[in-house]
Length: 149
Image (cartoon, rainbow, N blue to C red; front, side, top):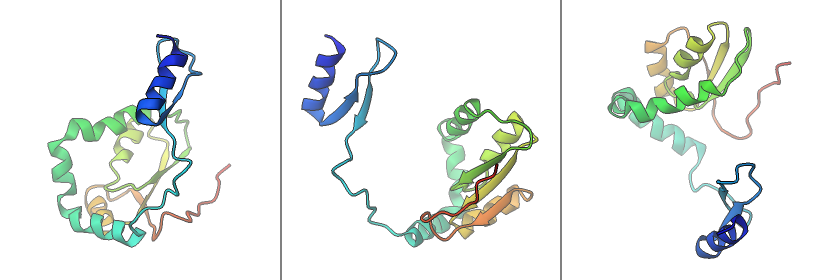
């Protein structure tokens, strides 16, 4: 079946839009069409903060139980970063600042600025990564940080 027919079939069955314009002849990219939704969450930023504060004391222990899956995001991410000396990385939702470990292994001359909404997780991070630079945020939007040239 050619890409055009397969894309049309997937869209008819699932309602998912398929990008047929990929360079790889064997693959297609599936994307949900969210254009008709308003993307509004039913929770407030304060609810997110409360949730993470409530689990801060077990966050590391629970992630250790699924460490391969948990750490995969860090391992994979740093492979796609071109980290030159003296660059800054903004880590949004830094949790326990674990990304710092992976980034500094890739390039110890990179500065990481961690932002977190949960005071509880920031306290956890401070205990295990005391030199990590952390900034407390109250909301995810608007999110103000100056552009570093």
